[in-house]
Image (cartoon, rainbow, N blue to C red; front, side, top):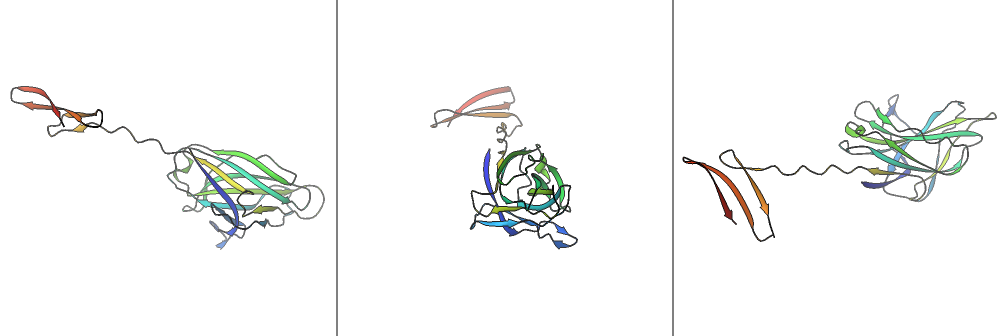
Length: 214
């Protein structure tokens, strides 16, 4: 397994276009930290969950197997009574930003502070995806007015997505060495000083076996 630490950055990413224009709420996941700052989400009055921010990272589309992600958000404010949640997604940004798959949602939170969840994507999902995305949703509860999330970002130990990527499967064992007559020969390495090659050859009298010391 390979563990990678990606920081939520307050840097425009714009992986996908909304109506032909960059999405102002699409930001970046990065291995490189910066000076701690705050991300201010858009104000909403919706009483059902709506997406208020995404954070994206390019990934290797050939990554095998499933991925487990620990997401930590340091939330400073919700602007009033509200609920929020988040999940990770596999996005194919070369096919209209189609969602290949999504993790389950995190727990639903109503308070500020540090929140953390371990989320997972199914095996094989990365075969067509090129972007790892953190999606954050918010909805208003309680009294009138708007709601907006404020999250601490850019610092390396604040809000992040930590992914345990599966390592590629080991290569298959080397196949037998093919000899000139179509038969096979196996090579055995002993103490490092010599190798014995057992070669099968054919002659006019039949088949014989020879051992050649290297």
